[in-house]
Image (cartoon, rainbow, N blue to C red):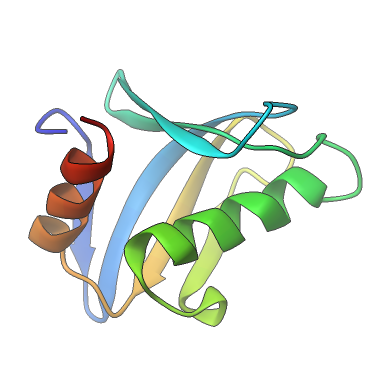
Length: 100
């Protein structure tokens, strides 16, 4: 997770996520070109994959769903998300722990 491009913001972090919809289950796949790769168990229809991504990251990082915001990339696979209430080191630690 050291190559994950994550930036600190005033109240949390911003990270780029590459989404793989229609997976059998939602999970962190790894890091690719600085982007966190996440497989989501939802189709890319009517915002379902985005909603599952937000819910999954909130559960994974231990924050409320309202603390995870889709900043850009609503209709693309690569998205930018803002997560309030966490810091970059904490996010890296959590992601490293679950991806091993």
